Length: 153
Ligand SMILES: [Zn+2]
Image 1 (cartoon, protein in one colour):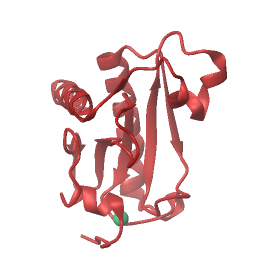
Image 2 (spheres, rainbow, N blue to C red):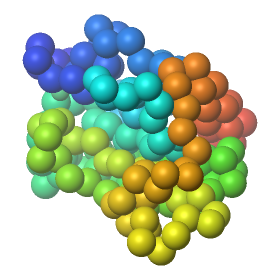
Image 3 (cartoon, rainbow, N blue to C red):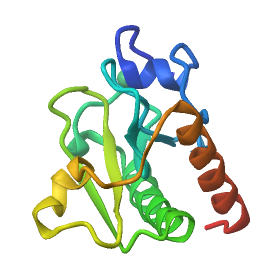
Image 4 (tube, rainbow, N blue to C red):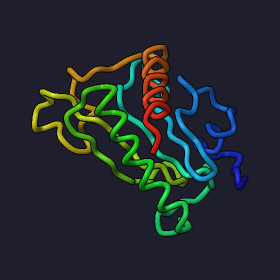
């Protein structure tokens, strides 16, 4: 593959960074993972998935047609899984790409009761939102994996 040594997404895909729950889904073009703990975190928002290209590519506009189709499908699959597994009432999908130049689309559930001021890109800042440590993230990743397996596209 077109792995880049200093890219965190490439390192996740090649197993050089340990990922709670591992890779939830992958095929030749796309991988789905759950966000892992950031350096200063002991808990992370539960229900924050990434749909990532397997190829190291920075811009949405540079995806091949096959990658673009598969990314779209897997964003929808990830959203379905979050709804069914976590009971979230809404799922956001967004691409930013300012920090890590390897296409990763955030797919994040919004839990019932989340106050309006936390809707949108700030949904994971709601203090009462379910958060979990590595073990909880790994357990959720396993549930999402199982749902996707049981409900093939
Ligand atoms: Zn990369």
